[in-house]
Image (cartoon, rainbow, N blue to C red; front, side, top):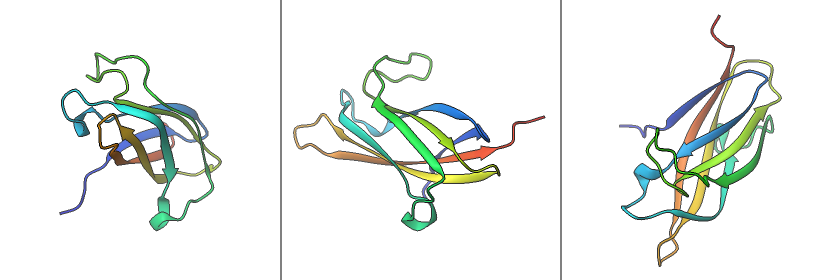
Length: 117
């Protein structure tokens, strides 16, 4: 049985802010701390160079609609130089505010595609 990752669908040639909720991966009362890292690991760990990922930070505001509190999600801005449909696998990591300083690692598929017509 394979691992199931979250998927985000974005229009080609767009720059978007993505917020990835990590609350389901945190124990009750836990939060993220420090500086999160988002890396393109498409093609078995070989970065494609087509993505621009910037402004990576923890969420500073709780999101009651999606059910996560402050510092329970990673936010980043993403765009691609590709003009064709393509998919990328991103690795997201950040320390948890636990006494043992564990790092939480998760993966997210980002799909750039033509918008529905």
